[in-house]
Structures are given as structure tokens and as C-alpha cells.
Image 1 (cartoon, rainbow, N blue to C red):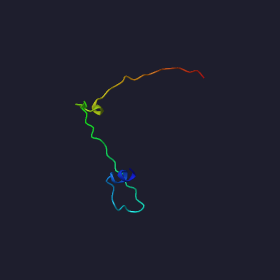
Image 2: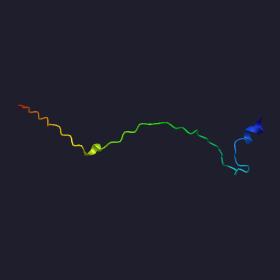
Image 3: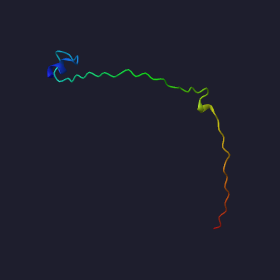
Image 4: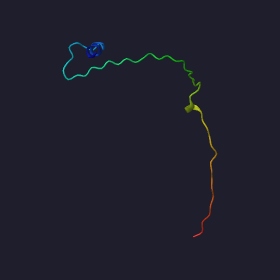
Length: 60
């Protein structure tokens, strides 16, 4: 059982000493996504806000 596990991984037969070999296999994942494309970028939109002016008086 142990020999089957070591030979079934497609690792190199003569590995270099001091190196670690790992075989990673990631599954292919396909999915549909909805992507929104902006027509005009946000940095070109100019928004103005009215100024807040507060008046106060102090007596010394």
C-alpha cells in the first residue's frame, strides 16, 4: 500500500537532495458571472456642495 502511494504521484525518480516536491492539482471551475461595465468613469463627475457658513460673536 505504501509503495502504491509513493509511485502514484508522478514525482521525479531522482529528486535533488534538500528539495521538496509537491504535486498540486486544482480542479477546473467554470461559472457564469455578470460583469457591469461603467460607461463614464466616476472621477469625471463633478459634484458641488453648498458652503456652510456659521457666524458667531464673542465678547471679551
